[in-house]
Length: 235
Image (cartoon, rainbow, N blue to C red; front, top):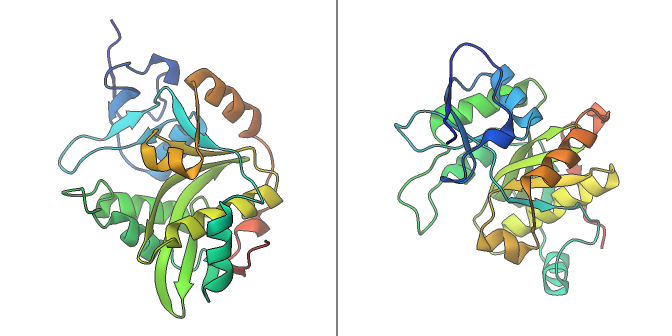
């Protein structure tokens, strides 16, 4: 029977293949949310996810929800909609505001796992150039966005939100086009759920996911692609 690893001051994680089957993917407990530990986790296909007042829990689920970045991402109806709306699209213009938007509980939720502690941890990664946000604006109002962490040519998506219909899909479309332009291999969407499947996610087993991650995590990416910038869709 597998047992959990309890992390201390050491940053190393147990192999992700040792994650529990129930609850699916739980690998380790404890540690902290320092930039070094977070980057080590993502480098090995592990991510934190826990409720308020719980210890930090680290996961590597099986199967995994993933997307292959595509320039032509999105349905015909979505593309038609995005051609009509006068929205603006940016990268790294409002990281904390995007995280705050993602932290707002959904209609079917009582709370959020994106606590102030989580927000500050990922903001520190952002300040160090390791975490990035994609924003959707209606004039000067932030109406949608997402954030995540690139590891080589794999983008580890964390969360997205919307305040107007299709704004989160617009952010995800922008992410797809940006990553496809720069030859990224994969978008990691972590846990499989109906929303991601409806969006076009595929499910892969842990072994396949980790193989792709290991093949792409050392590939060089120009830091220029993460400069603060405004972007436009290509339809």
